[in-house]
Image (cartoon, rainbow, N blue to C red; front, side):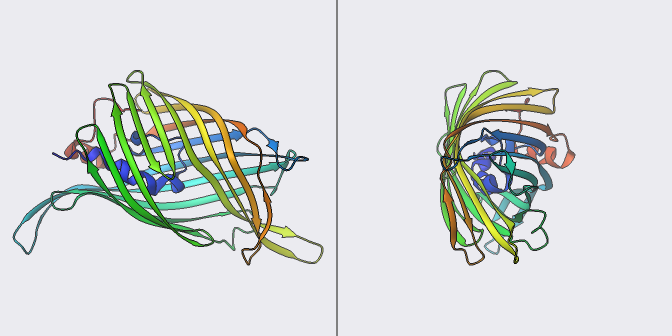
Length: 326
């Protein structure tokens, strides 16, 4: 019998950019939750004469919208049992870049985004995940003249035995230009306490579950932002775009406390960093490669798994267990 809990491997790639999760673990998208998160990158050399660093704070909400099991009957006189689970993902993030300790732009970037994810398991169509969303990253000055981004995609899951799953699909995303990204995911249990997961080209993770309430992640992932800002000269105010990306490599310690609270602390480095600015014609104006630097991060999650809507779906689909595997 197919185990629908691993639908999350499929859906994870749809939420990497929207959720900007503190780190990668399947169970963190399993239960609806409200997450507060923050990280800080130590300033490092931007161009040999200046330092560049940034901090990020924000919250993420995963909100259940629909959880039900449906019985269908096709024109070919065949019954189909289908379970669906739909959640909304809402996010607000404050990003503050700094050059030589000075905030540029002065009030940083604000990201607002909203997405919808639908998980579906049926006898006829097996396991699928669908999703889409939109948002914007802007400064105070450009907030009312935004350049929105959007994304959408789907993934199919195959289960190879009880401890191995693979997923494949594609994402279409727009952020200044349209991109089509094929993805491949794998989720593999390695003994009683270890699990390896990867969703290429976005993220890879190895998790060690020490106890029911404590586990450790080792991970690497792609991250960054693309925000609009206003450049002012004596003659005029001009709109610009700043793109930043890096690869994050780190470890996190995760403790599950008081039934519904999860606390995570992480540390590592950000490397392969790139910072660029563009004009309205998408012409590259500046390009820098900041040096590799350490970072630290933390998150606190309030897990709302006791809501009747999500609990009914978890029970009917066999997704839940006695404790939450964080």
